[in-house]
Length: 81
Image (cartoon, rainbow, N blue to C red; front, side):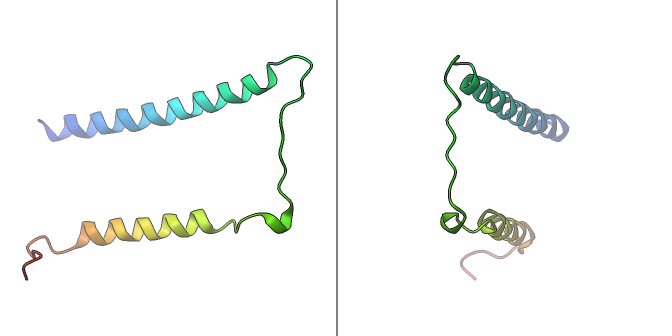
């Protein structure tokens, strides 16, 4: 396969998945308001029971650092060294 073709295919797949996610999120939000006479369900978590807001960022940084380390490792070395 051509390298440009593969790059375009991956790019199209990522754009498609992001668009699908946004569309499904919008549809779910509209569905919660579509029932007449029934208010949308809301749940509020008290401030003292909420998880730390930095957890997703910390996990993302660790995963990104791991991906960079794997991408930059010496490809000539093997596990037998």
